[in-house]
Image (tube, rainbow, N blue to C red):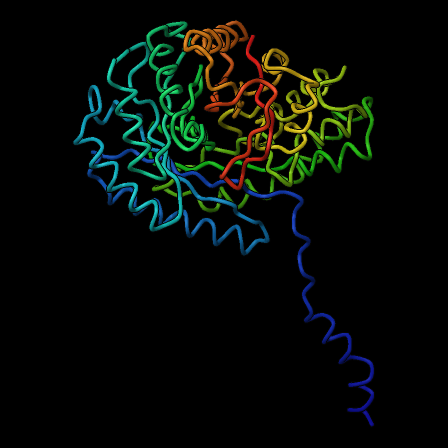
Amino acid sequence: MRRFLFLLFFLPNFLFAQIKEEPTPPDFRIRTITAGVTLQSLADTTTIKNAITFLNQARTTFTQKGYEVQTIRIATQNLHELVGGMPNKGTLYLLKQIDQIATQNGLPIAIGHLLPANQYEPNLANWVRQLYQETDNINFSLPIASEAEGIHGNSIKAAAEICQILAESKGGEANFRFTTSANCPANIPFFPAAFHEGVNSFAIGLESPNVLTQFFAESNWENAKANLKQRLEKELKPIEAIANNLASNQWKYDGIDTSPAPGLDASIGEAIETLIKEPFGNTSTLAACALITDVIKNLDVKSCGYSGLMLPVIEDKILAKRAIERRYTVKELLLFSAVSGTGLDVIPIPGNTPISTIENLYRDVAALSLKYNNKALSVRLFPIPNKAVGELVEFENPYLTTCTVMAIR
């Protein structure tokens, strides 16, 4: 009888206590865990392989904690530091070896700036075309402005030539792996602006617009700023705790790039429209951009990278839709960058855009970066062959959405 009573009253409670509740998946992804490494030379594949081992362990740790990790990535020091001049056939051969390792392990690699600041090489664009054609995972950039030297005119010239020559490949999509950067710091986890300095380290990049969308659905202008800060810190502090536990003498933790990077099912355009109750590009879009940036730049977590508002036109279905509706222009995107954004990203422009126009746009962004306290900005343009302003363009890349070709006046 006693045994029966024990089973009747205590066994159900015992069994219930053993049932662990499944954690609720967060409303965002970890877009990337990016490892920054300093190679001894371009032949130093051992350091690359060690970084891959660490990244796989880090991804497993975050996955076991309930987070979806979309990608792992590696950034090296700037290529010119390893080459010491204009890259050549030998450089390409060694990069192809690195690219093979990247392909085998399913991750991209950024090699930073191809040339030192404000340098020009007339054959660089042709070399870059060959690099693109013979590799699949190598990302690269050029610096167009810095606090120390101002606007880099020679770099702007070289960058425009690269942008134009890459437009000849894959219907313009080749520029996905190239960007110009103005005052971008080392150890940004997002590509293609990433490059590394210092000891081996890692950083986190997020895809978190859905958190903002859900929050703004229940908020208004009066309480949005303070309450959004609390909400984001609640989401990010557990990530920071996991990252701190992963850090060691071999791997320094750089922080979280708090930029809410969008994806095709995580629209920053939708988040902004939820707050302003208007289509993106209408009045108060600028105010919303400023509000979001004020919050994400002042979170109580260790931050790094851009930590700004990303508005990548063809990576966000709402932004692409509003571009098709002509609710905003490249000029408005520049305006948003002045108060919030990270520059001009993945913008389709006419394939016959003069190279001088591309140079001038780079120069505008470089000037904007210097004017606003050396703000980190980058520019990634997609000249689309045989397409004019207003025509629709589709892409092979599954992470890009249909959009209209935009004008640069």
